[in-house]
Length: 165
Image 1: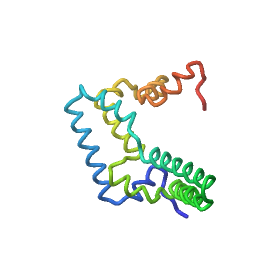
Image 2: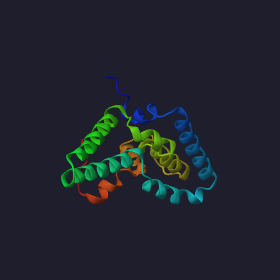
Image 3: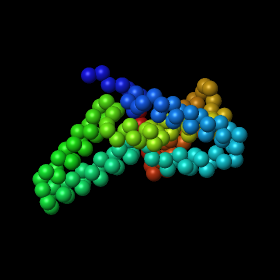
Image 4: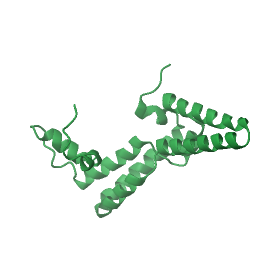
């Protein structure tokens, strides 16, 4: 079996019109905020809260598994087919990047984590977050890691931890 790379799984299994619309709308937002830099902080906060395809699929699957299991225990074992089917779809999504609700979510404009990150980093670049990164030198790795802001959650919780590697 030849599955697409993780970041490409969902777009590869989405109709092209939905991918194009998501791309076009993201580019339009980036262009808007390039002309309204005073609003970038608020938009980045919104992006931090945006639910992506993975989170929605996982939450919906978990909900259906719990409901199906409870109904199977309380009423009829036939309800156990629901968590079985949902588990199969979730496995299919994990391997291939496709499952039945994905087409609906993408048509509704739900983006992948990578698509959300692309907008976030474009806005951070416009805001100037990466201007201070040195091209070379012993501090360049730390400056690059700090500029992304993606490790903040770890270091804020574990400030005395040594780097892993």
